[in-house]
Length: 439
Image 1 (cartoon, helix red, strand yellow):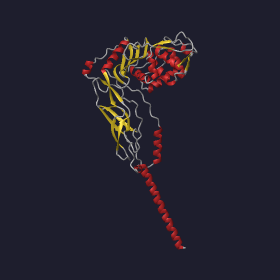
Image 2 (image 1 turned 135 degrees about the vertical axis):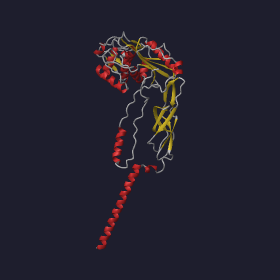
Image 3 (image 1 turned 180 degrees about the horizontal axis):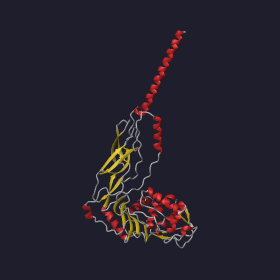
Image 4 (image 1 turned 60 degrees about the vertical axis):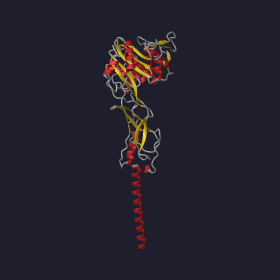
């Protein structure tokens, strides 16, 4: 079975930790550097894709034969664990037609309020093929514009969105490309907001999965793509108000959530879709298929029975103990701060090992306080990290704070200064006595 070559999970990666060395001198410089490091912003998380942590066995393949997929490029992933379960040519750069509109909708959601009013520019009325038949100066809310983009696949609505967010199509395309890079899409280039044929406009199944994983984080996106029919409110052209989803899986395939279709002669039939059963949401990305709906059903029919999820670590689960300085006890028990799930071939259970670390833990500590990280291993593979949370209060040892090296150094300097002052005072008193005796 082809599996995507990708980076490990980095779900909610931990910010860089700051380790304090015992310098023993130059204390002001150390403090200034420490303050600068603490003020530095953490890097934003991006939705990564990973392959299966354990390859399917021959027995698994005999029970679950690979689906017969006709698309030039296709991908099946677990949207909850960001795990690719099956893939064909996931990194091949191809035109993606109206699948482009997932990014357009994402940027509109992120950069405008649903109740904002969009005024249609002249340029939007010139858009070709599928449209909402917007008129120059017509007004429509961002909320209803999203329905037009994601259900009817209206090209003019995409241009109106681009002008509303960025002021022009080129500026919006630049924003699309910046957002794509933030999401880890290295094989994607946007030229326009609607996916009409253009030189240099392309993506891959893997990158489109990353973009869609980000979009489905927003409830409004999920609500719209799962809608079969909607009546928009607009200021003109009242005869054209009903928009209907192009997703033929809605209402016809168990658990189908919709998402987006696309077609141009160059791109062929394309589709991004998801379906949810028993709390598991699977995603398919299909590019250039002669049997798009058949491919989608075959991939989903393969994915649901063939794969399962394993809980690697649960929130509040005991994860071990870490050493603590300056406490009544030398160590404190820690628990995991959140869960990590993994997708596995059905019937497989991965051995899990938790490794907590908290190099800067010092008493006093309070139960529930985050003090480090827990590394989660499946077999020998590092799957990810979760916060390490103190499982109990740990008071400080009386007077323990005075043993900190910086404070000890300060007290030593203070003692030396006091000693020198006393010696100087004694010398002054002795000199005064000699002077008096001489008089």
